Image 1: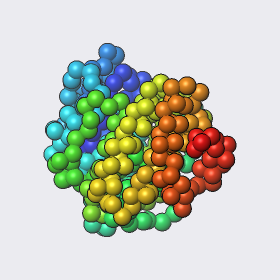
Image 2: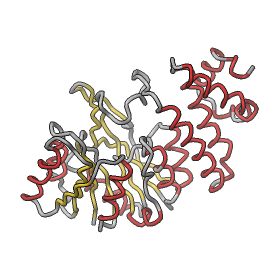
Image 3: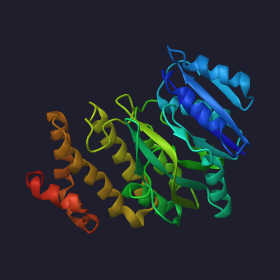
Length: 307
């Protein structure tokens, strides 16, 4: 019923914990596809050792590529009616699959989402934890994702109908794969249901691929440029698909640029984001109905970007 896909690369100290958390699931009808993305440590060997003990596990070894290429390998192999992803440095609660599957089936939804914990130095902090269950159309779900109040663009925490991936695959060249894919996943759904019950534990450390996305983390070189390029494509894609929300799609792109202009110490990034804001100043002003308090504060601080 469910295909769980996990990409692993040089996580020999953590991958066993992730695998064991899947094998401890109360929901048993799943296959577990582990894609060893060219590991040079024992990660692939550890996965093979677990596969010998549990026939639901299939290990695929491939030459090192980006995360998207590895996930595509898993998608090409998957046979389930639903797809779930887990990262090799994270782990899940025993009811993770059972809860998400029940949520999707009960609400006849293409996508089910749960809450999560963010674990830093062994301390768990709530991340998208809230009361209630919320249903959205695909268009509404994309907008909710971009607000980042109930869930984000990360692939984990989401159970997705396999048919959504019939015409979708991850970018084989992008480093930050989720930002260019997840909005397309939600945009392809008829219905998404979201719960704040925390069943996924996201471990934060210096080797995370997404390091730099939190307020207190350093932004890796090149990340902002790829994000801005991807967000430009996102605005174009969503505006074409859902033109009635064109102002909001543009706002999310420019609001990010403003935030990065404020956070970055790199002159190239400053020049790049400043130019984007100056070129779209009039349009950004027209989206002020969406401004957050942070936007207003940054605009007061960096008024010169509009000069």
